[in-house]
Length: 393
Image (cartoon, rainbow, N blue to C red; front, side, top):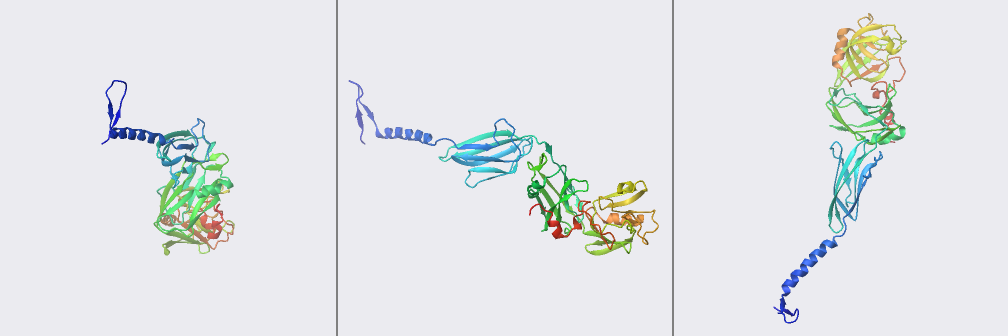
């Protein structure tokens, strides 16, 4: 092995430098140079920014990386719930699936790697503006309920929904079913005057269907200063396939289960002056005891009669109920539009039909079309008519 002789200073002993040691010193210097060559960290930008101002509503959360790629993005709201999002294949950006909700605080944690492999982490926090109005929903049927096979999904809005906002809202609503079911959303004006959107299957639900309804609505503008502040997720099931058919001229109501006749009762439908509304109705609610009050259907104080086993069809007052005061049951149609029965027969029908079951009225002289918002009246229209109610043309 060769050595180098170096004389340092006059009269001093020579110092021997071994090449292996010199090589070691050179490697150490190269290692330090490699760290310096890693360059700057990737620049991560979060929108909305944490600039101390409340972030405007109506936009998603986005994260971008310049000079590198994102390797992880974790976003949580002030309730500790994770915000779902999508990272691009090249890691250049991440975007939330939904929009920011009103008056909420979000914390964004990111990990990024620069083009030369330098890793870095950032944390950003921002708060969103308060909404002038929060638009809440009333959902029918209720979560966990078991209903009849004619029940539509019905969503009633607290505040008006502008027509130019409907398409985005409709896209955010999804119906899932345990078996394949074709259906569609339709916009409706509720009997109360409020905006509503219903989803009905093309044909009545199969018995025993499990239905889920999801609304990714948080942060969506509904117009008129109203915003949705949360997402919705609920479900219900359909029970037995039961329905009733009223034949007005024969004063009869026939019950069917799975398409087979299982019983029939006599009654009294609307008179020629006030004929019962025709078409297919959906049972919207029931009451074991109720007073039939004439003032509620526009007849002043003409009568106030206690009744039992009341089934509500239209919101305007078409009911099935016991009518012990009527001596013409099974003989004459003389009601103000309801179908009255003997107490024991009304009880049979009440027990047989559930909320969401259908009641079809045939051969009535009433030619007035019942508006679909007058109760849960989606079946008053055929499939082609119903599909035209969608905002997604």
